[in-house]
Image (tube, rainbow, N blue to C red):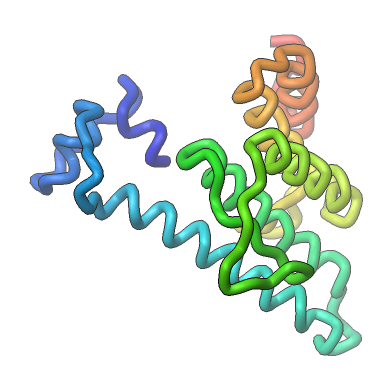
Amino acid sequence: TMQEQTTDECKNAANEAWSSEINSLTWSTSKNEIIEGVYQRCMFVVALTNEFMKNIDNAPSEIDQKSYAAQARFNRAFAYYVLMDAYGRPPFITEQNYSLTPSQLSRTELFNWIESELNTIRTDLPATRTEYGRADQTVVDALLARMYLLKEDWTNAAKYAKEARASYGAPADK
């Protein structure tokens, strides 16, 4: 992710103007393709999810609409998590409050919305991955753990990280 670009984990060696700016934490208000790209892609995911949610009731009855809706809502929650972490207060739009001039939530309100969304959809997702590229309850636990780390809520971060690790067979106490 963009957040890892500035850490010891990742050093971008691309011969692009933006890579040295990102690597040295010296970007300015001038256009930076990566920073804008992350923002635009996340807002695109939000828009796609909102459109999907408006139309899911029209889907064929033989598909599991509840599970598909939960998958889409997870993608939107993840996009909002990235937006909140990287930009603070993005425009907040769902299928319920579509607007050409969307409002912003405070970081606390957005955090609470994402947390609530993840807890609401958790049981509509499979317990463990049944298909590559699909969200499951473990991925919800992992995202909640990451969110709680961001919030510096160490108790909940540890709780959800242990649950995610255990779901994939890793020892939960390590």
